[in-house]
Image 1: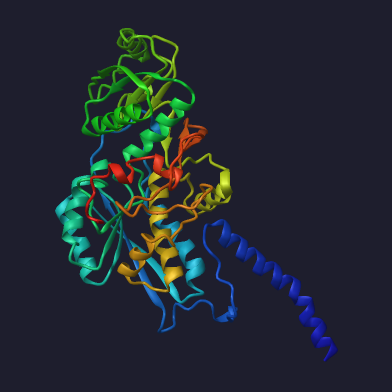
Image 2: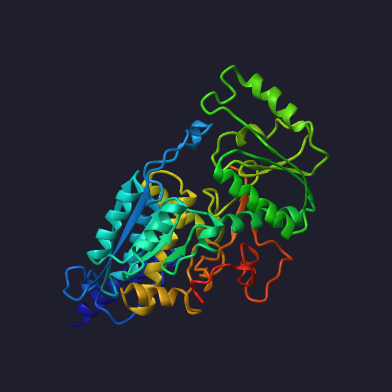
Length: 424
């Protein structure tokens, strides 16, 4: 009997270390560990008849884009889907103790009608959660097609502000930051630095115009002065560099020479066709910001703050590359579903969404504070990095910008400004 007790006691330190490692790993991953009187040997409950299966579909619209200027900017084939996969792993870390099993599959097409048809078929088969990276018009058509079904869409890709305002939909939640949130984050930093005299260079593409309009709104909101605005025309394909970098070296100074004296030159090049030409080539020695140079972003692969190092490492080990903004937005969507399922013990889409929009919901996402959804347009509140390609420079909201509810609502359209009525 004494030898048996000694054997059991000898195992206890090892068991306690294993339990501590598991709990710490779950906490760092942003997953709430569930610790209670359960039999660890029976924890994987996927084979049990009473397991709650929660399938999540990743929907991607294959859109034609011009190749980027830099060979370093080609997006990976699994962008977005990799974030979903990591989120599924994190959800199942806790879900296996609660008899919840999360799975995923991907739907993709270059034809919006075909994409919508496939999604509707999945919804009719009982799938309730769709994480999507599609254009704004496709997103609205998809939302309308699912409006009478128990299904919810998480927008991980479209930044258009109208999707959060006049074109908002009750069955759409947004983990992608809006243009307004991104440009407000940048404008706050410029205001904090007292860099108030601004000139703006925009591209000809529709997405360039949306970003430029958002920049102008943010400049006005935070008391910055727009001195001049010019459109930069480029010939797609020639890259303005077919004859050598000397052409660009002469063109950019000539183009910017006409601007009045300014503190910062802002670039609005969402199509990513010319913005990389501007840093270090302007007539005046001034910083470049906007879509290039100093830029706002929801995620940065160099972030080590708030436990992000292990998060970055887990993603890199799983996928073999750095996490990008779309990956992060897709991960947050999946984790939102998992967190709500953990707290409610349900897999019902309506139950989970009601919980997400309540004041009880919060998401740990390696940004130093809890993230929540705005109840008036279902936009996920979040801090925004202001960064260079290699390092983040700061995190907005900036010091001194106050709000009666949460300082995160100083980024983007606030409740008194919203044009969204779907959630009234």
